Amino acid sequence: MSVEISGAIREFKSLLGSSPIEPQKVADLLNGMGHEARIAATRSLGRAEQRRLYAGVDGFRPIRLVDIVPPSARDFRPVRHFGKNTLPAFTHFEKHFCRPKGVASDAPGKLYGYNFQPTSWLASITGPGYFIAHEDPGRTEVWVDYNQVPTEHPDEWPEIQSNEKGLGRFVYGFMIDTLRGVSEHVSIGSAARRGRDLGSWFVLCREP
Image 1: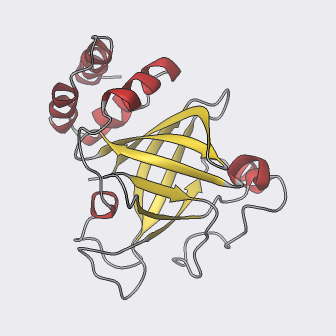
Image 2: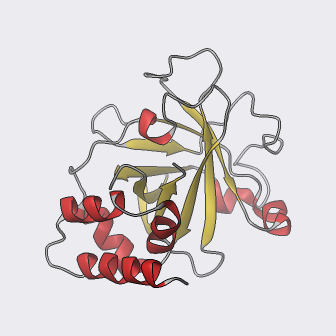
C-alpha cells in the first residue's frame, strides 16, 4: 500500500472518529482522493465506523439515481460500485447498476442492478441478488429494492433469479436497502427486511 493511500485512510478514519462527524469535511476529503484511495479508504471501515457514518450524513447530501448511474453513461452500460459490508465474512463485494433502455438519462425513474461476488462459488450459493433501485418518495435517499427484479439485463450479467427462492431467500429475500449520499462517488447504506432494520450497513464507492 502506498504512503498516499495509507495517509488517506488515516485521515478518513480520524474524521469519522470525531464527535460529531462533520459530513462536509468527510465529503471534501473523499472528493479530493483518487479512485484507488477512495476504494481503500471506504473498504477500511469497520462496523462501528459505518454505523456512525450512516447516522452522521443523515440529511446531509441528497442522493438521486443520476448519482449512481451518471447521465453520461449509456443505457445498459454497467456502472460498478465497490463495496464493503458489515457481515461476519465475505465483506468485499460490488453492486453493479445500469439504466434501463429508453428512459431519460437525467431522470431515469429506476435503475437495474445486482450484487457481484468476487468468487463464482459464492455467487452460486447466494444467487446474483438482483434488485431495482428507485428514489425514496419522501426523502432524498435511494431504495435498493430486492422485492423487485429487472425484466432484462446487460449480456454480461448473470441470469435473473427471484430473491424469494433457494438460499438467496435468506440473503436478499424481502429486503430493501436505503442509500444516503456521502460524497460525489461514495454512499452509505443500511439494510432492512420486511421493514425491520437489521443493524447491517455497507459503504459503496462508484467508479469515476
